[in-house]
Length: 115
Image 1 (spheres, one colour):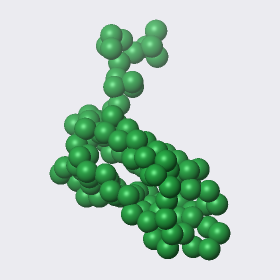
Image 2: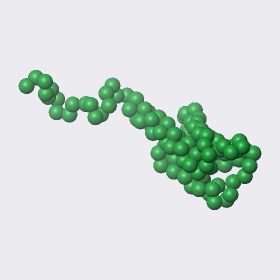
Image 3: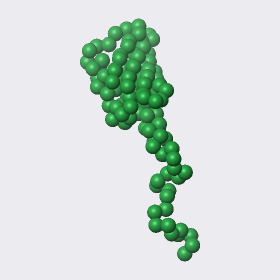
Image 4: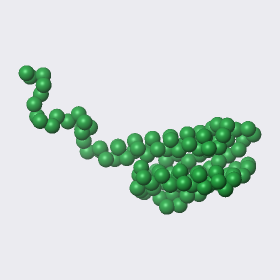
């Protein structure tokens, strides 16, 4: 898996770059088919915009972005959005053959309304 951090109109300290790489690697725990992660940090005056692009096997790219005042908090918000997208997609592909979620399926075959 490749992780690439790009910076526009500024520079990042090595500690922040390492933090971004370490936290981005955790996306693999949510979805094993992640092949590449691209993080773009863009400085626009006092504002910071982070964009996260995740490439997975057999799927189009996932994209999340956030704008804020601080680099770390903005990146964490973007990462949280990405985690939600990946979780929803993984749930969707795992439940694609069921009419009802497994939590709604009656296990004993007895309907409570008949009693």
